[in-house]
Amino acid sequence: MSEEKMMILKMLEQGKITPNEATELLNAVKDREAGKTSSIQSDLGKKVEILSKDLEPKLRMAAKTLLDKTASFADKLSKSLSDSNTFSFFIGGKEKTLELHAGSRCNTELRLNAKNGMIYIKGYNGDKITAKINYVPKDSSHDIELVELGNAFYLNYDEIYFNKVAIEAFVPEKLFAKLYLETNNDKILVDGFKSETMNIYNSKGSIELKNITAEKLDVETNNAKIILKNITGKSVKAETSNGTIEAKQCDVEKIDLTTSEAEIILDAESKELRESNFYQWNVETSNAAVKINTQKDPRVGYDLKANTSLNGVQINIGNMNYKVNEKNYVKGITNNYSIAHNKVSLNIETSNAPIIIS
Image (cartoon, rainbow, N blue to C red; front, side):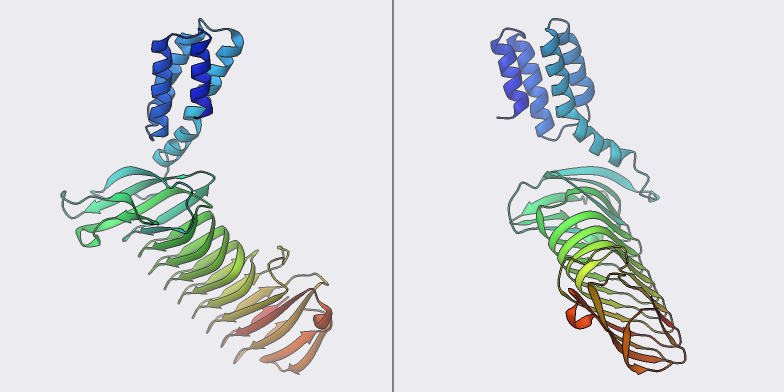
């Protein structure tokens, strides 16, 4: 039994509230647990205000605490979604808010597919999915639901009957072993999530991920940029075309960044490497520059290979022992590599543009 219900029953037992008043409070708590949050703050507030006139000061404070605990957080979620300006509202579109308790089971999967619309996922410390859906159906006979099937939670609709679907959702940040997101022609943004596997797919839209922990993270789009910030894990693979890739504050054992006709920036300077003793980072683009900021830590050693064409390689790392040191091809190892606590292998390739490593 929840603390709120025990408090109400104790007040009833002590004769501080009547059975009818206790029933009203219990029903309000029940509504909150069932996800009915839109009117809880006002309805329960009125009940507490009436009851407080006859309560002792300590019980009056307890009743006020009950009001705050039963309504505050849920109302914040609902208000955040209702007041959000994340969506550019679709002409002729509809909007609905869906909620579903995720529980605390292991090996669950969250799958959210949008269509011609954005996906914005914000992780929080809870157990309920709350999603605002903005959509344009081709006719009124088809709907969208948030459903649970086996160990999978997903947005259920037939894409054939919708022109556009966009998703903005608060989701439990640690409950899902797998996260799958897919859309097109708009952006994907995920802020705060921990999972074993994450697969993020887009087409002609950007992808931005920050404050992420994942054993395996696969990110793919085209004709748009990819931004990765504060990522921790074993493996990250990010691929796009005609779009830049920026990876900052990443403590990831194996990184593969691939694009074309666009710049790649890998900034590892401001995050301590703790995930592994050996790192493998591969960076490849064409007709654009590559810029790498390395750790300025004597405990980190580098094994470096950088190759470009029709341009040059600029190395600003001290204590390098060069095996090859040509204008457009450099291969070397830092003098501390053999005794370094963290060893980083860097393979960098581009064409018609410089490689700058500092």
